[in-house]
Image 1 (cartoon, rainbow, N blue to C red):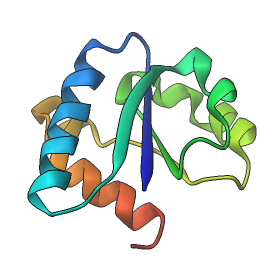
Image 2 (cartoon, rainbow, N blue to C red):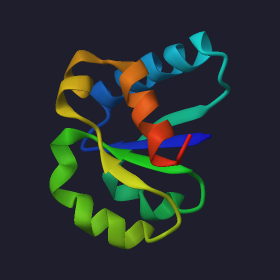
Image 3 (cartoon, helix red, strand yellow):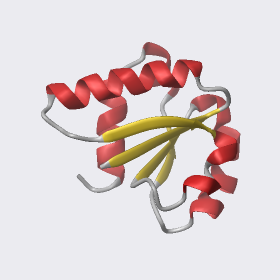
Length: 100
């Protein structure tokens, strides 16, 4: 699975990506997980299976869903999981979004 995270700047989201990669490895899952600036979402269409937005850019959810269309599920990361760096919970959320 290819999980892309989008945020405003990228520093804290990069930390979350590392936590998610760690959780995936512990679970024996080989996922590609990365973070980008929200302005690059359109450039990455077709490169991800699920898109998670950082809570700080949740106001863009409707716009992003329109850009992504039916290519992939889009959701906002729960602020509590984001703030705690709960990679396992965010990973599970991504899996649930694609029905896994």
